[in-house]
Image 1: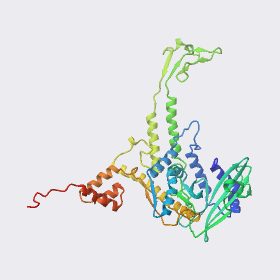
Image 2: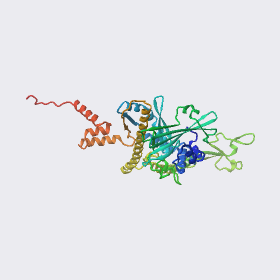
Image 3: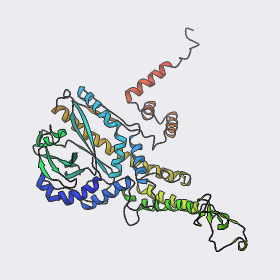
Image 4: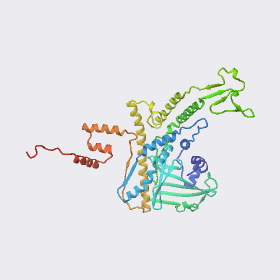
Length: 474
């Protein structure tokens, strides 16, 4: 939505807007500390492969994006959501389907920045959902459970030479949910400018300056918070990046990994094979400059040496001994520290061949990843529940579908963190030993409910050939 949005937040929210300007425009204060703003800026720079320590000498491994992508993949792979129970539920299920299709990409960004808003709105008889990343909204207030109850969303458009900015404030009041829209016009991007009517921008013309939706006590947006304790601002309910603990402190682990990777690249570059030769071995330009047949391989010695003084002859080969294994070992050790800090199993980023494989170590490592993924899935489920609530309210307000109840069933594939083959074999042994019922076995391994499992077992038993009674009729 914006160019360099975080610089806009810091430069506009705290300089141009500031708490006093926001309070004057919307009569609200922004509930985000400068420490959180600075941290959010760093996380975003790292995710976009623009970390402040990168230079021509320090190259990037792009670890932040890799970490966020890996977590998002494990969280959403084969994820299914089924909303059922009434015609209203069928409508919501159809509206939610496009959201699920785009979820992995959005979850990745949420993991990188610590949080994400999902804000539904009605368009042409359908419910669309805006995904608003942590650097594109301003929290205002929270309830006693740490949930965001009021927030300000920013939309900026360029029309000709002018910049139009819309502030959309959502707030829960005793009367219901109050939504306010204010528009401003400026000739510069970094200045709020003067108030203008919403009709100044065609996309905003149908919006009401103020609307009160009664009968609800929850906001019409859903906040998906990455489930990690906030150690940047302990008093803030806002989420932190999935790699925040590998990016903070005086010794940033991800920076160390980039530096070690750059050392490895330099080791190979500086250790390239070379042939040193007397300048007499090369052709020269008219100005006396040596013409090297291949600049990467050949090096010319100064004219102070000559063939007679060189016991090695005309050419001398230089092939240094590389120290790549020592550097790789150091890089692998740093990567394992990053995995631990980010709640990932050893071998996710580091070399799996170097990971200790005792049963206890493997179990603890896998449990760490399982806890990270399952906690994130739980947080995502809670956010989608809030989203469905908001979508249901909009469906009622705009009479998009008949009123009715709905229930959502979430199915997260856990094969990423659980060895399904091993679980199947262990459960089979329990069934054969009489320690697990066949119904439980099918429910656990085939994802069936109890009624379906019983029916499948009955069908299998009905197909079994019956034993012939040799004494029948005797």
